Structures are given as C-alpha cells and as structure tokens.
Length: 189
Image: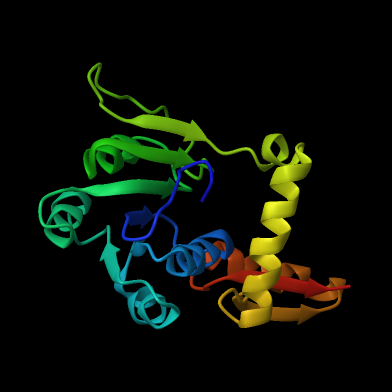
C-alpha cells in the first residue's frame, strides 16, 4: 500500500493471489478502493478468488497475462503489480503495467534470473517489511490500518486448513506442496 502508493481506482495485479499474503493483498486493495486483478495458475481457484473480492482473475496457465490486463484496463495497463513470484515472468508482468507503473516484488517463488529490457519504463521496489517497521510512524499507521480493518471485517485472515499437533506437520506440508489450498495453513502446537 505505502511502497506502491496504492490509490483508489488503481488497478493492481496480485500474483500468487491464493496465498496468505495474496488473499490479504486482495482485501487491502479493496479496502483502499483499488481494483484487484488476481492471478493464479489454473482454473481451480478462480471462483474462490472472485468470492474473496478479486474484481478479475487471470489464470496464467491458460490466459495471456499482458493481453488480459490490457483488456481489463481498457488498454491502459495496471498501475501497480504486487508480485510474489519473480523469475522470467516478472518481465511480462511489467509489460502489463501502464507506462510509469510500479512493481513491488515481495517474493521469489521462481528463483530463476529476471531479465528486463534496457528501456523498461517502470519503478521496481523490493518489499522489506523490516525496513518500514523501523519507524514509529509507519508502525502506528500499519497498526491502525490493520486493527480497524480487522474490527470492521474488511480484513479477515483466510485459513485454508488447521492441523492439530506436531504429529500432523507432514500432512500440513503435503497440503502446502499440493498447491491446492487458498490462504494460510495453520499448525496448532
């Protein structure tokens, strides 16, 4: 929100949207009055992402990301991307943004190198919550935003499944590896 300067009406592409952070990003975009465009690899999670509030869902295994974002935004491109993936697809994600758009890379699920053209017209930030949290003013703003969002119900953690006890860690890990879940996997100890 702050790093990308998210504003009402902005289209924001959220990769890995079915993850714990991705579902929170969809809720945050909605709370800010932005238009969340969620991405996921396959059809299985489309309906759940729409129910969560994504205005649009792009399945990247079957749809062209740049073409779909351009279609959704009337040819303009999104103003912001919040990317958990990185890797070679990061260049295409940038191509889906409006000239001068901003990409916030917060994860590296694809550890392969990112290659960008020399005239890629975007601002790129890597997200580091630790750096932001060092300032008291940021911590106050974050606590107020999250606290009021939780109180109003605008922000609600999405829990995929809860496992009881360390003896179920292997089951929890299998679920994580299957990539069939949405939200966070919780293990109670």
